[in-house]
Image (cartoon, rainbow over the protein chains, first blue to last red):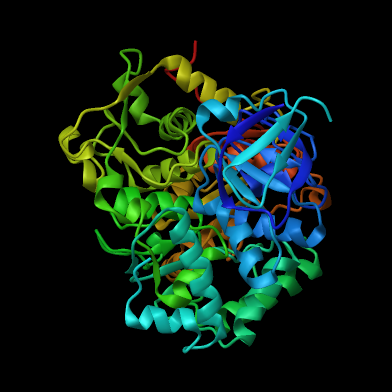
Length: 143
Length: 421
């Protein structure tokens, strides 16, 4: 287990432990993710064909189309959304879906930022634990 | 955040529930980026228009029910289909119904019915230095970089909230200092001026740029100042697809980079990367896949929407020859541009050659299965980047003239390029 310092951009309402889907590749949710089944559909992406549903999806930052917010909102509606998003930096394109879900729909999709160094320490980890307060998360190599 | 008296009223719900919820989101966004205040915007570009699911339609309708209304001129992006010719495109009627609901909601919010992903070529461009809120990755890159107006990458439907409140947190690319280039791309010796004569060179260079630069602000030096607006449009769209580019500087070309010193705001590049012939070849292998000469099902142009200048290039390249019977040549454009080519007689001439011109819609929303489309060719690096994810097929890339030639012959034709081995 490692404990890493993080910034909770949107903190969960309660402690949660979820499976981790880790990637070194930035992603475009529009075109790159199938909202219907939560799978990565961009063949160039390291998580191609993997599902992010109910997992903490770690990607360094967002790229590509600004349709990401609408895709994430639709994933929330279809219950295919990730359980949390972990980035090195989160731009407004990625943050839009989680922020609007929080204010307009009372649904929470936690968003967490890590330093580049700590982000790379997530590689190979199986599960992570997120907390409603504080500035740490825990990563576990076993599921 | 420091709010003005008016902003406090918006936040507290004095001006209605829609304003209150919108300010809640925008203040949270501001808090995340540690922003001190809001900045008022002059215009907004609404990209919550291509149907991506029920959540999007429900959200826009919810805003209408709450009594929301845009308080700055807000243009609509392309939607999923041609609203009057969706049946010819073989789009399902359900997609049409959903699109009409989007149309009704966004027009009720007070949007301008521009329905284009190139509003800056349809009469809706901000001025240099103006603060705006744009969604649609190519529009963001174009108005920041080529026009010199200021927007962050606002994702649908966040831009709706900016348009409704008329303001955004004052951060990121709204602030002068953050618009300075951090790194520099130079052209290596292997990149020769003869390459500048091929429009696809700019697309490939832009793909490589986005791949290298990611989501940062960099500059590129060495491109010729006579580069066309349509190549600048395609570069914006391509960089914003292969990377998360919101602002790029082309030294000697774009307004905030008339000199290298301007691009770096008096500083120096933290990093310099040289673009080589291999970078161009690698980009081409991402955007153009398959054997030249194979049968071609669809040539799709207008990603972003085709301009009047591009229609002229297309007609010239076709040279009065008809599109091959086994191939479709589809062009996507704005209502504004179609109006101009219709008035000039060009639309009629192109139609007689078998060119099909669609408005409103997006070429990436292609009903691949209904048409049985297997081979796609386009002049767009954006289309090329998303083609596989959206259609399950790898695309071919070519210049407008190669696309026209291929459409006439019914098979993929490309000229030998100076960067090929």
